[in-house]
Image (cartoon, rainbow, N blue to C red; front, side):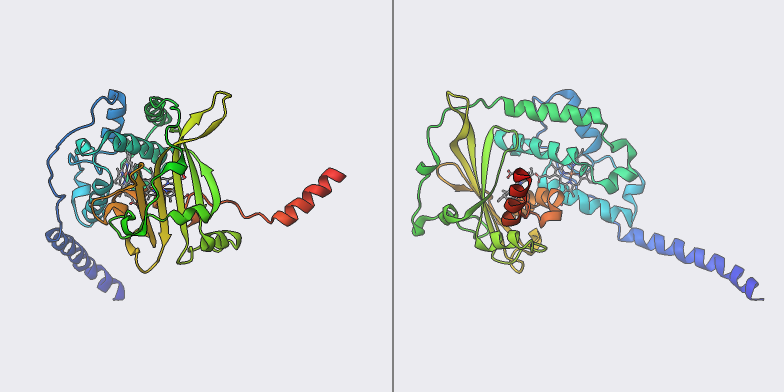
Length: 326
Ligand code: HEC
Ligand code: HEC
């Protein structure tokens, strides 16, 4: 008797599911249609083909979505990804970027695909055709590196000390309110780096950040932590030594979990060239550019790349002395 009841329930349940599914479709928004203003130019065709195949469905205004991508609830996720992806990088509006920005995007592209973060793994799983082969990655790497090879080593004209010192009244301010802060010169160096783009980067941390590193308590980083990064061109001295040359830009990350809720609690700011011209037209710039790389690639260390490993220098030295005196 109970068994018969259950069988009778099956058509009703099915009907409910089908009706529910149809109702969902009334809430099925479509991707906003936007015009193509300008494609990439002077990019090798094989590079373009890879990007078109694997990335254009999100990072362009030229979607070729499958039937499944267009039905709710899948379409909700797809549309949200497309909206975010277009915000950070749009291959159909490539002409809106300066030459330097276009080059920067290719570093970002190489970085993301090299660690398998793009195309988004969830998307690659359901769209096997979008997966990149090792040859695809190598092709993009070669192109990204060829862009940096074009910057030759230039002799320094302006050393870092000549960067315009600013008085409190005319300190440059980022659109999100973060001020250029010359005090970084009194902070500790926590790292040096390069992005194989012929730059040298010196990273400084304020007291709060340095303490967090020493105590390994940066999950999350305490409010008030601040890091600064000074980027210089590499200069080759006659004896072959590489030293920091022309100043390129100054970048900051300032932790305030309550204020910077859209960017994982970090406020970003960037000041370019001798004039220290702030990056970004509105406060949205950090959401549209800075955070996505830091979020995707540096999540395990609280969104900060340059975190020196914690070393107990006293113990390390004692241990070293023991091994050499043996
Ligand atoms: C399913 C949609 C989707 C696909 C396909 C996709 N991306 Fe993304 N991509 C995103 C989203 C969403 C973000 C923003 C991530 C964030 O903010 O955390 C992003 C961010 C990026 C960024 C950071 C841009 C910046 O300047 O901050 C790069 C670079 C990138 N993607 C490259 C690629 C490349 C290259 C491909 C193709 C191989 C690709 N993506 C395919 C959705 C996608
Ligand atoms: C292409 C991906 C990418 C984007 C976009 C990006 N960053 Fe970074 N950022 C990195 C990488 C990689 C490092 C580590 C290497 C280095 O120090 O240059 C880094 C390091 C930093 C550091 C030093 C602290 C740390 O995390 O190690 C600061 C400060 C910083 N970025 C600020 C910014 C600001 C401000 C923006 C937006 C204007 C931005 N970043 C956009 C990739 C990115």
